[in-house]
Image (cartoon, rainbow over all chains, first blue to last red; front, side, top):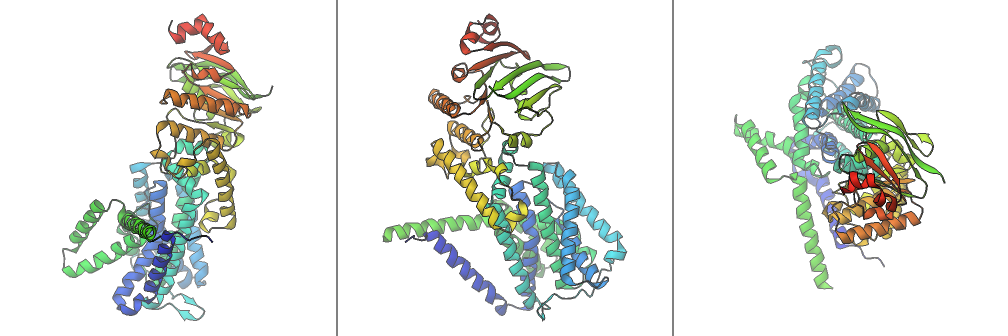
Length: 327
Length: 251
């Protein structure tokens, strides 16, 4: 009989435990805390795209707030003004974001380093200005209200408590999908491209087009998060898609650890919860947030994901050592 | 004998600097062809033109009977042209096995979306690539390093990984750029034995080097000097040629 390695047993039990904790958690929390966890879920989804781009392709993208906004406005405009079904609007937002990402990605991703980061920042600014200008579509600063709640089989995800059980399965599924991608041949090709682009080209990896594809995927995921956001809050305005949101998504990636996919959850939690709780300390809360950020970046160069990984490997080696001493 | 590579009157100028002046030579199927020359002779430029990293100013690269001059690197790779680099370009963070899986990337068809949703075809292709990789690992005796990140290997092993990665797709032409640079005498002997074995198994090889010892594995050598071929023939012919001795051996 094949024996199951100790690390795998650890991993399975830890995952099962985490899932149980996830399922019962909202029953012990107030509405405000659950709301933070819902936003953590939303930002995890959007942050995954940014994190994967940065960690696996070396692309710094500040454009995610734009795609997040496109998803949100597609949901809002489609369901309220056009009266279309919710899934159609979500899909339209994803497709539209993907198309725009493909169109702008092809020229922009030729750049690298600071220039690329600046170009994506410009995209975020352009998106914000357009959201403001296209008042007929976005309602400008007044925004769009009355966005319907998502309903599945007659069950309306109308409260933070209920939405928690919608957004997190989506986030978990996307974490799984990104993990599958990373461990596939394509994922290996991406990492190869990051290490030695010339050699990757010789291996037949289409470097430029692969970068654009990952950028498009990231935009689609960002739009999906934006749609969920619109249906959750049911009122959106242009303020939700400004530059600070773009920076927030990048922070999630960096804090979560760009080489770690599940670490994105920790990054998203920090970016959502820290300003919220710090604001109770009064007007100095933005400074405290900035200090917390600097401390996190200095002491956790691999992000929260790196911290979890090193803790995990220590646990696994200890588990292996103890199982060896037993036998 | 079939011609694998035909370099036809290739010239390359960078501004007013004429690096290559109408170079022509060909590589026959099953041969080991050497390209020697002193520093600045234009070897690397010619090599980059052959592999698609540079475009020639004039002239053509004909690969397996097709004009490949306008083809990009990937198209040439898929047609069966593989190259290595003067400083070994392994994928440092990837294990040796993953390096070889990346090496067979062109054999797969699935893309980003299929991989994202974990379709069965993706897993099947991964299995096939891993099988090819494991064959190459056995062939190059890299078993002990299979799961070690390639960046952690000593330089000699990295060269071997790079060579294995180029060979894993069974190219029609294997181009090696200074493969012995940075290797110890022992490692060079292993490299030469490996090249001889590959050639016996039918691999056509183009070797660019200024290492005359390494040239013992070649059938034909072309000597490049100031962008022109000044002599062609066997290693003995090269050693006997006064022009080569003057330009290259410095005696």
